[in-house]
Image (cartoon, rainbow, N blue to C red; front, side):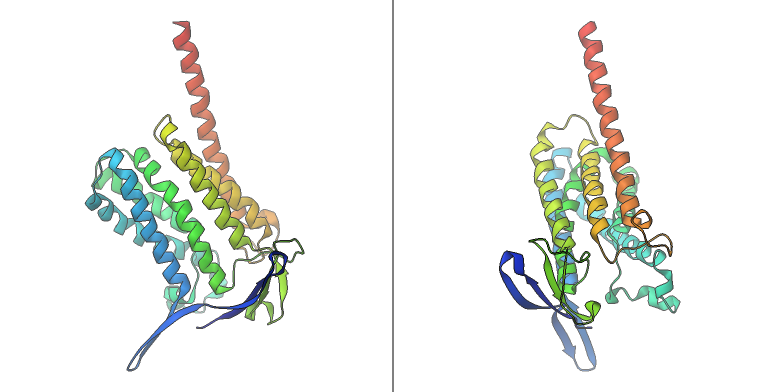
Length: 285
């Protein structure tokens, strides 16, 4: 279904312009399908992941065929996980079992994709390619920041994933069905997360050659993403909640982001303390 939003960024001097959710349509005989920008942007994100991982994977002896083998399984798992996560957290929105499969109507959650995709990568590494998981995870994870940075612009074309009302200089004016076709000025949280992920991608890649142990890039990526998403989600006006009581501490993405940040930061601290202890013991000998 075509959705049209009227967008502006008055604080940046950008006047109102129109954004359509549909990129183009396919109409052959009785067959008709709208192709949304969201699908195109997500697909481009997946392609970028493949390109980046193929480049990084050479260092651990993986070929393009290896990446394609694992990539197909991981992408399918990620999409299923993203949909399942969203459905399980919004069960009240579905009238029938078949509605669950209407993925073209929207409803994907990045955390579901990360969890299911991560499990798929682990299983592929262990049972399909017989390689250690952590070096592979180091190759894969930075690409997720890049893909998510791009993917958030799919939310922009849908006129969604924005925050509460504000009057700050970077405010975004939005007028669409979700606002009752009234212009309101909100936090462009899709933009915040896109920029946060791009910054993380750049910094982590600058650090990549200096990594000290397998898994360090993996831990850093999820700590970075979880930390940023936790705070950005606090600004969102369309969050998923764990209960009917809507508060910041019942926002699912805040809690999951916090869990990622604490867990991965804990692992980074553990390895840092361990390396310092080993250095002291080595000096003592």
